[in-house]
Length: 219
Image (cartoon, rainbow, N blue to C red; front, top):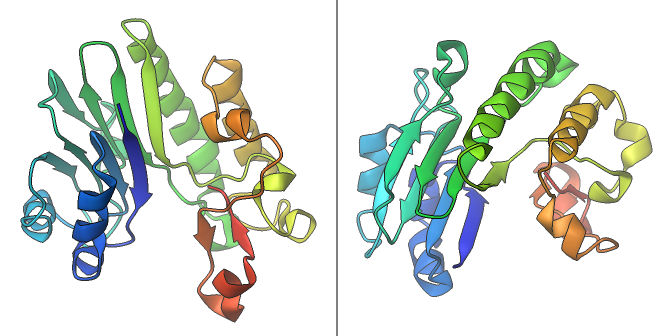
């Protein structure tokens, strides 16, 4: 089974570029999308040309913000929007698809925001509640978590660890500890396990030519 996770940074804009063609070419069984920035109806409209998938989307109450989606070739046994806590679910940050042998969860973890103003919410509330939700699922069958976790867990996971540590969202000790908490609970960072010494990033700033210089983060 081939699984994919992709922060599309706006599904309507991405669909207007190469998203549909890319998904057809990749031919994945299950796709998790984050930061769709669209209502469920808008997600389905944007992906109307994508054939062969059941589409499930969860949006934030705030328009054009956050949002997640799961695209699945096989119809899941069940689909759950959110993690069952209203204060978190009003931002549309997680969807769970249940299959015969496992759960697939896609999530867009809250960014701690400029000035780290949401750091306490993200680490003391979201991280704790999300892990509790995953642990409850794990009691029934294995869980695969795919998404934008908004944390660089180790120094190798970002280009400039020293200058960003405890200053920049995604690389504070509190966020690192949240990821460590997941791993200690039994979850596995599959990329880092398979490629322990490989430098690869999943996000680059739009500023300063970061992408061309490969000044990035693996989130």
